[in-house]
Image: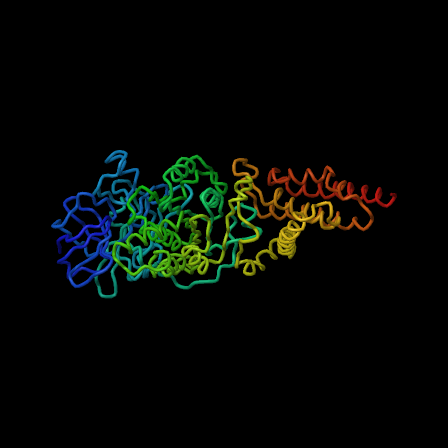
Length: 589
């Protein structure tokens, strides 16, 4: 079925004669067959957002509907790949059309000629339903790709055989209860705006270890949780997301560069193939899917890229994997919504954003979670959604930040003053929060006893106390403070510089295990405890600040993981001895 273009306004095209088309159908526009999606219908007139440059397109051009919603291809070949916002493989387009994406180019998302070895798991005559695993493909050395029965389908396996197949070839034949046969290949197709189904959803109760001390210890995120990283330009949002992608203990990372600068995506593309996965020694790209829709690419595709990424993540979740989705940034995605809304002449909401901004953000973040997957083998998977927010001028009172904060449970507020002071990650400990901390109490107690939570609470209290004392220091100077208050300032400085601050370019410090984090913070707090105990004995507070063990605590974060426990014991013994000597001198005086 086809219609005729009557109006072109940037990426928005209006066409008439499409009475039988549906909202969300994919269409092909003009002689170059530009890909687009129907946003709304009025009678036989359809408003279409085109995912490619529309210059040269005018009234009278033909529009042809495919009758299918915007969908992604799911199957072997997605890992290690780089897609644009509508799942076109950029390396293959480059090989076909050169450095610039040619308009109307049609390249399948999954390579049709590459052969995969399929190992059958299901047996002939076995009854299977949606989500059941019928076989596996070793997609990369790091990830075993499980071939599942598509949701909503069930029946009896009539034929299945291990062997080498392309993604389109039939690997199994399924007969449903009506007696109809369905040929199953390695590909599934799924509409991006429809969440994939699952058996049950659970409250997230396991922390995701990111290796970043300020995140894991103070403001942790759950596997299956949601987080926002807001901050002004230059405060390190992209670097935080890169660190999370590199070090998080998830099975698969889906990195969505939606509307950010091209050079930032280039950094990812250049770095990730060279980085080694700390869990298996393989290149990090072997468990990563990249979606690049940078600021110079079509604005409408930016809006689709978020849904493309979360649908790919849900597919891997359905295999029982833990997946992290990193969106950089949702502000650019919201700007794409605002532009399309303006061209549709909808009533604008706050700051020109559409009135449905908050509900669209919720649709994205609500697809995160820990779920029991469909299928009979009791798989459990998770999708963790982390979105960077770029508020203009760092003003988090603007609509995207506020709508995001109402939805997510972790808020890592970046601070430009920390970034300019070269304190990275520049997460402000006074404005950030995590609502998952109580959920993890049982996990922390099981692994570290109750001391982990006690230390965390104590460190937060000291940092808040420091902020109050700094106000006094600005008025009357540090010398007017009591020895106990001066010790509080010194301990807070140690927490900030020796614990929270991390150097991403030093291998020993770029990643910290939970055990190392626990030991480092405990060391700082033991120093505070031991020094505070001798202050009533007249110990010189300046002498306490200059003991050799104080310097060793500062260097402890560079210690190799296997030496942490021994170093901890040595420093504590040395510190007690040196503090005791100062206390004795104080008593004599």
